[in-house]
Each structure stands twice: as structure tokens, then as C-alpha cells.
Amino acid sequence: MPDAKTLFEKIIAREIPAQIEYEDEHCIAIQDLNPQAPLHLLIIPKKPIPRVGEAGDEDAPLLGHLLLVARDIAKNRGLAKGFRIIINNGIHGGESVPHLHVHLLAGRQMTWPPG
Image 1 (spheres, rainbow, N blue to C red):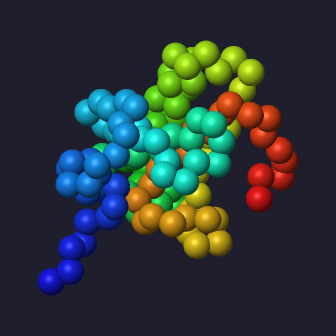
Image 2 (image 1 turned 30 degrees about the vertical axis):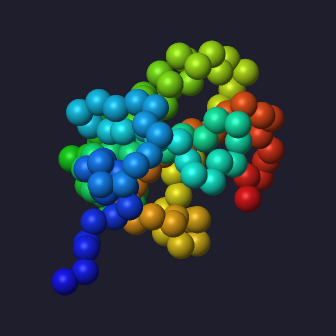
């Protein structure tokens, strides 16, 4: 039987190494292996939600928590000039891992449209 765990579940379970920047009982923040900015972290809930489009109403506190963690990381890193938060949903949205996660990017001038 194939392993049904996502890459992020394996990282959370410490089955795969990652550079962990933050962790609490609800989420983990790791460095992206393919950074798109000088700072590019992934904030991943420990609850496996495939994508934001499949989150339930009961997940509202967790979704809010992910954004507040991004805010706190940005504040602690002195990112007063700004940062970008991205959540991809589905293949056309750029999703590459079917486990909801928030991208936190900073350290350079962001452009618009983003891609």
C-alpha cells in the first residue's frame, strides 16, 4: 500500500528533514526549498487540509492562526517595509503539495501582478 502522507505531513512527523523556523501546537514554519525571495517560509497547519478551498467552517480559527503566525514572524524579523502572504489553491492556482500552506515572502520589492 502506498504511503498516503503528504510531504508536509512527513516533515511534521520528522520523517523528512527541514529547516524549521517556528513551531507551535497548530502549525510549523519551514524554509522553502525553492525560495522566490530572500525570505520564503511555508507556514503549514499540522491538521492535514488539502487546500483552502476544502477547509471547513470549523477550520476558521486555524486559518486565522496561520495568518497571525505569518504576521508575528514578519514582525520578529523586522519586515516593516513589507511582506507578501500567498495561499495557492489547485493546479491552476500553483499548488504543488496537496496540504494547505501559507507562503511568507519578504526581503525584496514585490511586483504586481504576482504571476
